[in-house]
Amino acid sequence: MFVSLNRKIIYTILGLFLATSIIFVYTFYLVYGNKIQADQLASIQRNQQYIDLLFRNINMSREIQNILTENPQIKLKDSSLKNFYWGTSEEERIKQLNQEQKKIADMRKIYDQRYNAIHESLKILAISSILIIIAIISLGLLIRRWVLNPINKISIVSSEVSNGNLNVRIATNSGTYFKDELDNLIITFNQMLSNMQHNISEIKNNEAFLQSLVDSIPDGIRVLDKHYNIILANKAYYRQVGISQKKCLKCYQASQKASEPCNPETIQCPIREIFYNHKKSLNVIHQFSAYPQRHLSINAAPLNAGKKQYIIEAIHDLSEDINFSHQQKLSSLGFLSTSIAHEIKNHLGALRMILERLIEKFYADKDDNCEEKKNLMMIYNELVSSIAVPERLLKLSRSVTDTSHEVNIKDSIEDAVNLLDFEAKSKGININIVAPLKEIIIKGNDADFKMVVINIILNAIKAMGNNGILTITIKQDKKKNVLISFNDTGIGIAPDKINRIFDPFYSGDNASDKKGSGLGLSIAKSIVEKSGGKISVSSTLGAGSCFTVSFPAIKTIAKK
Image (cartoon, rainbow, N blue to C red):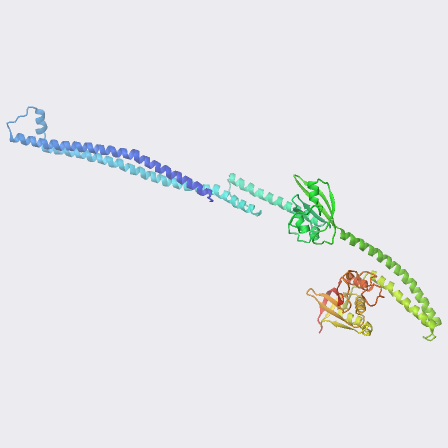
């Protein structure tokens, strides 16, 4: 049970004072009062005996006098007795008796005065007690003001500090001229709190800087102790294990979703190898349970921090290296392809010009059924088709520079559909456009956008073969992004090939027409991404595919 220091001091002083007063009064009464009372009783008894003797003497004298009066023949020989009995008159004897009674009354008065003195002493003692109590209360108030209140303030602030609040300070009396030890203690305590808050702030800033520094590293970083606790980790590591950064788990819980350390027979544990087998470093390849298809290279080394020992691990995702290598290969292939396409296009263009001059000079007037002219025209048409292949390849690598125009989505799609309407209807394919009443505008190049639409529609026509429905839907989501979906009823795309359809020169084996160059979807993806958009595909084998193109809209104009 908590009892304040103020109460302890007051209760102790009052208890001691009451005990001392009771002992003093009781002793005084027993020793002095009883003695006075006994002396007074003894005096009263002695005086009472004297008065009794005096009364007896008077009565005896009266009887002797009566005897002598009645018997005059009796003579007293001793004159002193005669004087005693007859020399004193009745009045003198009464006077003597009154004097004795007065003496007794005086003695009683003295006794009353002495007894009253005891009461006066008790009154003085009571008044002194009251004064002492007032002095104790005054002293307690001063102790409370000078000692207990400062200590109470220090106790309250200390409790706040223990709860983590470092912004509190002890109020000081700035107007006090005379400062004591507790005032200096309060000033020192406040200064200590300020220094502590400053140091903790610096530590937090250093921790934030260290965490930011570690988070900026692209590879996963984690620091472990010998008890498998994650002391520090960066954002890349938490992405690798697929958990929130705020969660603090054991390394085997975060990486392998296990409830106990990894089995050493199946997984080579860096903690066990470095702490217990005393290896200086370790390089292993692990797979985390969140992404089992990824292979991670873990480089572990001991970290000594004073008396504590840790392990620091750098975790590198090898799949990123594979993707980077693949991108390098595609980049090199694209550079080589565009160079070859440029040279082929130039030569094919020269052959085309030669054929055009030959036909114009020697076969312009001849009938179209002429076999030589027919063969030359066949060569010319195939040459034009051949020139279209390097042109598409060059279109894939060309940067979009003209993005200052506003493109009306619905109008551009209708133009593209009109260009392909004959080919679609010849195969029994219906193209439906579902669009809102309001105009939807994007920023880009109208020709490039039409090329994207044409390539996707051509791809859908090839996938559907004869008879089918292609539905083109235009809409906007809650964030005002423009979404264009091309949903066909074709043969679909196999799951193992859907990730390759945007690669250059890849033509799927599901299409009925396998004579494509494999550049249409690559060109479409290149144009969409360079315009700030995205293209995605979902497909069900045997049921159809859905290509979705999204663009950020710059404005939406309501159609009046």
